Image (cartoon, rainbow, N blue to C red):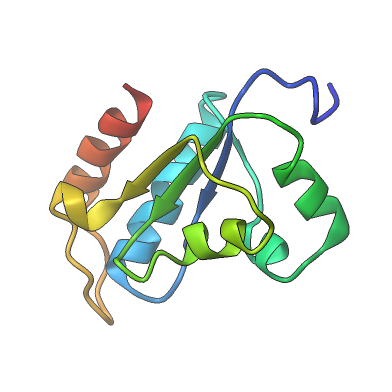
Length: 117
């Protein structure tokens, strides 16, 4: 199935070094593996990789998962005039940004269910 005809939304997440970023990435991976969404590469969009920018501009719905208020996913998309259909800033769901720590798996499950709803 080509990217343009795939009915699933695209999901982009930050995947930085903090617990919040890794929780966002985990949720995106779970959505992808469950077939709910197709995960694509936000670093490639931010880095102007033509094929990845084309995918982002394909017209498919976009779910953006930002782990913290820096909103890097949103920023990478906006560089190309793209606005996510659903943008989640995980701090709004009680996710704390902690350096050198793993995310809370129970909290990740809660966030996943909120995003899937």
